[in-house]
Image 1 (tube, helix red, strand yellow):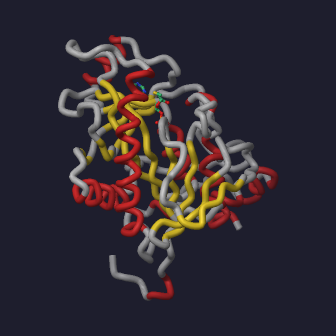
Image 2 (cartoon, helix red, strand yellow):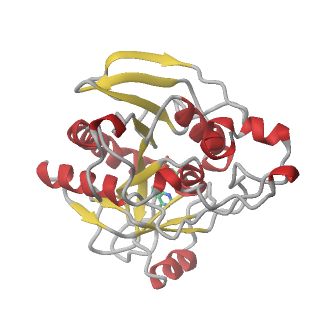
Length: 298
Ligand SMILES: CSC[C@H]1O[C@H](OP(=O)(O)O)[C@H](O)[C@@H]1O
Ligand SMILES: Nc1ncnc2[nH]cnc12
């Protein structure tokens, strides 16, 4: 893609969604926790606004500070809407995961590029009766953010793998051994409970999105390792959390550079997605959609 003229460049705002063990971001300048209201209800917590190396950042602890909210009860729509209406353009999700592969041991970071969504008890779309939309999630991860994360991780000498499939389970219980073995047969790399519908909603909101999946355990399939427990996850992710914060510090200056439209089209995902005729659209739903889809609805 040709470089657009300077006047067409945007100044990215980086959204950071912190998963288990990540409830704050050190080193943010001008930091301020602010409540953000959304038409979808309450986000998981107040959002932390600030700057890293001068770049605007907005951090949201996915489960809330102190981790009060389980994966199935998260208000994913409110979280994504709150980031969008706060001006965020690029989202990095930081998540604890179990490993489904021998070569992805605890401590390893995986920049996943695919998901299999086995969650079933969650609202998965901003759209619905009165405004129907179908976005593509064939490629749910923004490769531009993936590239930047990979470069930053390699620069820090972190053990990292680019690419992999994240199986999203409903939880809150961990998997049975039969499930774990099935997901391995499906070729999945890691397992977690939160990245869907988060990634689908980010796409509907035309946000670029990528995940750093931080391995904490071998789930329950590995003959030489104990079955996953929360204690074990917490122990490993305390180590992961410091490295995740270092990765964020390294990647934000790159991602924050003024840029043109996303080459992968994440920021134009709604261009051909809405099927409800203008006269059939529900004004009340359209009003709720203003932050996430106002670009194509106004
Ligand atoms: C505390 S282990 C299980 C918990 O950790 C992961 O959450 P997140 O993606 O927010 O780091 C996993 O998906 C479960 O929600
Ligand atoms: N084994 C596992 N299964 C689901 N979510 C997880 N988060 C961390 N480890 C996990």
